[in-house]
Image 1 (cartoon, rainbow, N blue to C red):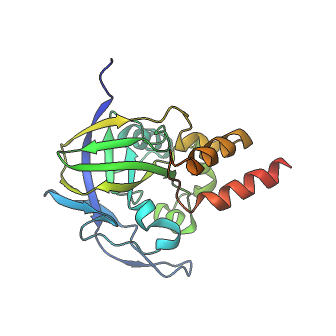
Image 2 (tube, rainbow, N blue to C red):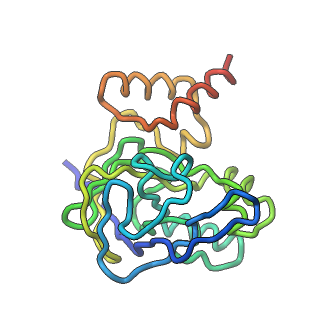
Length: 219
């Protein structure tokens, strides 16, 4: 049996300050920055963090957002600017493990106790575009498909920068959050729904509207 994939937590980020958006969407907690100390991650995310919009970017099924250094380096080259940890609103900046390439339902162990389960891709929004201040940012981010991954917390634990990440299990269906974001098919919908109905996979509530849209577009 081969060893499970491993990586490193480069940075743990939480909200630095709440910002009132210029686009009229209220208060956002997208301004996240690294913290040096060990911090607990619980059901609703990083202790001391804030989710400004739990309907679209939070709640237990989107408790933690991870983005890889590899994808951040891509954007650094594309934009000609530094992409420091937290700039995309991520809680975890990782290296050596797939984030956009995480299979839906994949489980990560970080540190000794924290256990996460991959749930869904990040969908770019106007608040993200405002933060980045780049032309056509939502379109460019969408077309690049390097979206990162949301997790739910299966077992709480304290983590800090430098902790080891171990991919403990990966579902055999093979549908990654990036694939579902960029190129979802009717077959993907049927596969994920069947696994969910059988109790082999727990999908977040967000998927019902995605499934409906995919099936409607295919008809």
